[in-house]
Structure formats: C-alpha cells, structure tokens
Length: 182
Image (cartoon, rainbow, N blue to C red):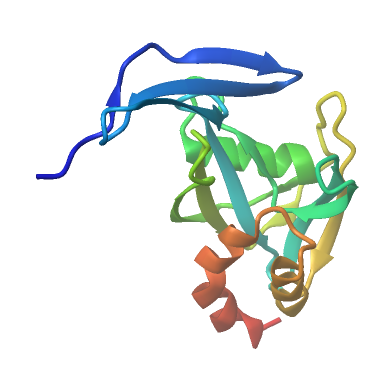
C-alpha cells in the first residue's frame, strides 16, 4: 500500500514584491511533516502564443528580464485575467504587446511551470497574424517587437535566448511543416 501526502494546515500566502510565494504544509508518507514553498497563487494561469505572419515569420516580444539580467525574447503572452478564458487572454496579449492580431487560432497544450510552481501555462498557435496598430503596454513594460524566421526561433529557444522555449516545443511539428514556406 502506498502512503499518501496529506495537507495538515492551510496555505500561507507571502507577497515578495510582485511575486507570490505559497507555503504548503504536508504530512509525508513516512509520517513526518514538512513545508514546501511554491511560486504563484494557486489557480494562476498564463497564456502565450506562437504567432506566425502570412509569410511564416514569428512575432516576438523582446524585453529585459531581471532574473537573467538581460534582454530576452518572449512569445507574446501574459496572465489570464479573472473571467477570461486562456484563448481570450492570448488574443488580448498578442494585440497589446505587439499590435498584431489573427483570426486563426489553435490550442497547442497546457504545461505546469515546474514542480514548485502553481502556474499553468496555456500555449496557442496563431497563423496569418497581421499588424493592426500600436502596442498598448502596461506600466514597466518596454517591449520591442521583432520578426524572426522559424530557424531563428528554434535556435533562440534552444540556446537560452527565450523565456518560452517550452511553447516552441509544443509548436515544433507545425513549425517544421511551415519552415519550407517562409
């Protein structure tokens, strides 16, 4: 018989700057008790989009990231707001961060951020993306929009230049189909 992990206390939510740490309390399978710190609120979700133009260039949001202390390439995306679906959030974030929109969307999948995160990541593919206007950025957002070839995207995703490399893996088969058409 396998022993289970059981919660023995309510979560403790700790705010550190704009980050949230959730301390969870478990009774371990051997009967001992332990606390584990996780990041993000329970239930937090983000959406990111692999956005392709009609000529199969990839729309990238380039911005400074304080963890690695360098400018990184991100897929357009962000938090799913209360009352929003992940798809609506992806569409909103694509337009806000890049000024691009699309009528052609497909869900790529869902991922857990990591084993110590409560965050769920929703990945989408948008094709035939077109620029429809200016960015609408939030305070403290300074984003440069770039268009990459699929080869450049794949290189950057596998060489530490992107924050959303996992979404590129989810889109890999479709990217390979389209690569010859760019």
